[in-house]
Image (cartoon, rainbow, N blue to C red; front, side, top):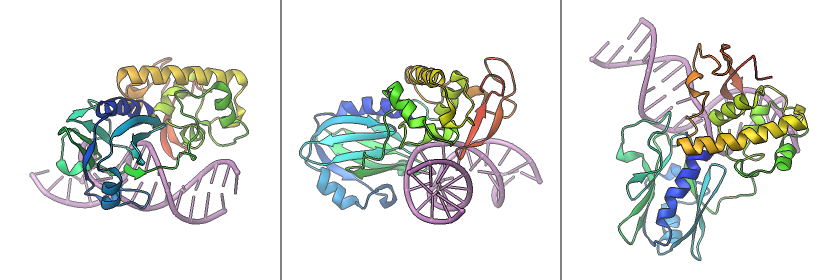
Length: 260
DNA sequence: ATTGTGGCCTGCCCGC
DNA sequence: TGCGGGCAGGCCACAA
């Protein structure tokens, strides 16, 4: 599903549209437009503008337009980005493989005939103008060790819940949280504030490596733990049967032996 | 303020 | 063969 690695790949794909001018906006699904805008306000804000920059913060894609607003795109659980008919990701877990044109929830048409399309079967994503960035914590890909420690300090919430909290640390979703905790040897149930300095360092190290690996492998579902996230699944490291329960409101799998 | 819960969305999979 | 219930999780509103 679209977590930090997927959205990073989307942002790289979106850069193919830099410098082009928007000539049309299609927003057939009012539900998909967030923040009080609608199809006509989006059209008025975007048509005639040139794409000047693409950024990412956490799971949010940001597209800047010259002398215009910033377009924010969220991908929810099943959203993909398609530029000039090309997709950034060959397969998205939990998302249907077939294609229904009705799943194209928003698109920009460019003067050269190309397009940028947000495709989202389950409609959990959305687009907005000038998203509020103040509600995001530091991006998980670039967070400093001290900022990570500050984000965990003093919290009694389960470590995994804290990692999923986008206002504390932006970009981690359910699958990557399980993968990082498994690699770090930390239980998702540990109170976030109970980690020692050494454990925070270890978490930070594995966070960086996990993001690098998943980016290279092409998605958050390509983790080493993924295949065993199922009933009867066993820890790839030591063979113990994995625990499964809901932590932070999400289905969680972890090794009862080496994740402590 | 912090933490936890439930609901939204919809396609898919399993059992009957 | 068709059908219905359960499941998936990012995000938000709301409660304690």
